Length: 269
Image (cartoon, rainbow, N blue to C red; front, top):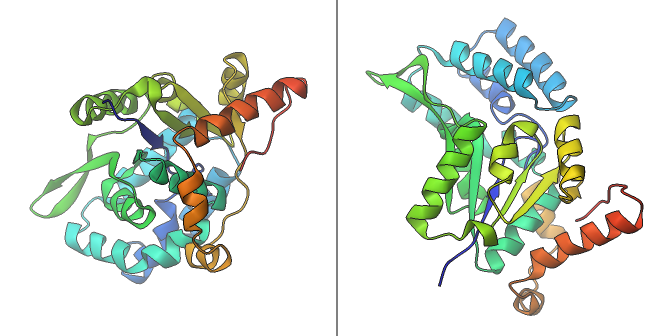
C-alpha cells in the first residue's frame, strides 16, 4: 500500500521567525560574527518576522547566509547549533504546528521538513520535532570550511522537485499527502500534494489560496515544547481514537467554515 507524508516549511510555518537568524547570539558568542553583524541580523529578523517571505525577502536571506558563513569551520558551526538549539529555537515553535506534527505522526505519516535554511540547522530541528527526514539548503565545503557558495538551494521549484524525488524513493502517494507553508515561493510545493494548507500566508499566497479554495490556517501561539508538554500531558486513549482521516477532517471543516463565513479566514488549531 502507498504511504502518505506531511511536508512542512520551517520558518514562519513551524517557528515564528527565521531559523538562521535565531542563532545570531550564539554565533556572536562563539566568535563567528561581529557585534555589527549581530545587530544587523537582529534588524533583519525583525523585518522578516513582520513581512511576508516573498522572493525579495528570501533572496536577502540567501545573501545573508552566504556572506555570513564564508570561512566558518563546519564542525564548530554544527557544535554551536547543537549546543544552543533549545534556547534559540524552542521558544519560537508554534503550539499549533507542534500539535499538527504530532497528529500526522500518530496517523502514521512521515513528517518531512522542507526548508530554505541550511541543513546544519534544519536537521537538528527536525530531530527535535520527530521528523522523518529533511530537505534543506546545502553549502559548499572545502577543507572543512564553508566557501560561501551554495551547492544546493532548497527554494521554490527546487523544493517541489526534491519532494517528488523523496516521494518516489519512499513510496509516498503525493495525492494523499499534505504540505504547509507561509510563502508564495512555495506554491510549486503546495500544488503537487492532495492537501495543501497555507499558514500565516503572505499576500500573494493568500490570494492564490482563496482562488484555489485552499485552507488558510493561523498559528499564533509560540510555546516552548517543555512548557507545552507540561500543560498538555499525553492522552493515549485520545491518540488511539484519532483515525487516519483526522487532518483531512480539520481541513474539510476549515473550508466549510470559510464558505459559510463568506470567504473569511478561520483560525484552525
